[in-house]
Length: 135
Image 1: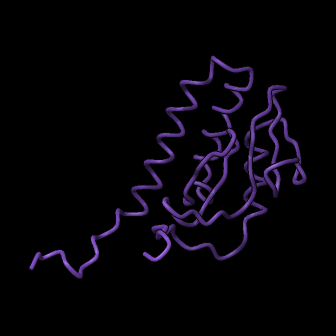
Image 2: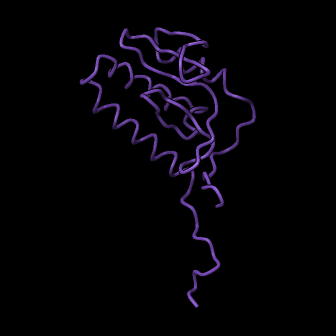
Image 3: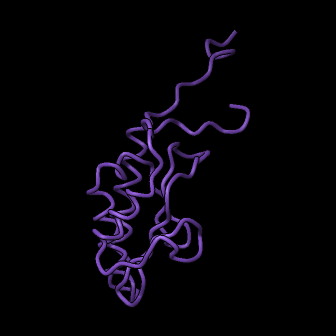
């Protein structure tokens, strides 16, 4: 009998996965910065969000270049809080849904990040591993 039969493989460390994802977002933002009209604004948003402890403690991901957050890592994300996005006009949007800026439009990434932090639910714990269905 194999020593692995009946025993689950350990999951990767959620804190390491979270930090790795932040680093990947930073690298991606540096690469796209000069290529798109909103690229430098996007890069500034990623840097500002990463600098904020409340957001940096969450698992970051993007969807259609909008920055989102989760309390679990991949493969099964648990989305929490608002969406932040960088606009081609140099503004930053914060919304509670995938479309619209119902939580505001801001001139600086720091203002957008502060609005996002205010919209986070209380009592978020550390990021955990996002179990697959049935896992």
